[in-house]
Amino acid sequence: MNKIKYFFILLFMSLSLSILAQKQAIEKEDYNNSRIEMADTMRSEGKIYVLVAIIVTLFVGFTLYTIRTEQKIKKLEKSLKNKP
Image (tube, rainbow, N blue to C red):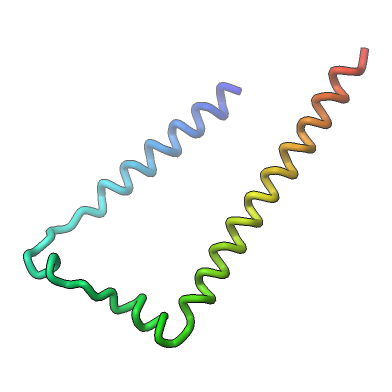
């Protein structure tokens, strides 16, 4: 159990360090820019809906996989407790 805990601690620490490494200078012109060209292009071509569908599908799949794995683990734990 401690190995898993240490793994997650190291994972979150490394993620936080990579986020800090992506800082860039913000200029005055950036505050006036209200357009996001990539999103506007994808929305105009209808591709944004495909992207949203893929993200939702992945999220639902990961959630179902996690729930199913948890059910299997509970079943195994219960069967191990019942054995003498």
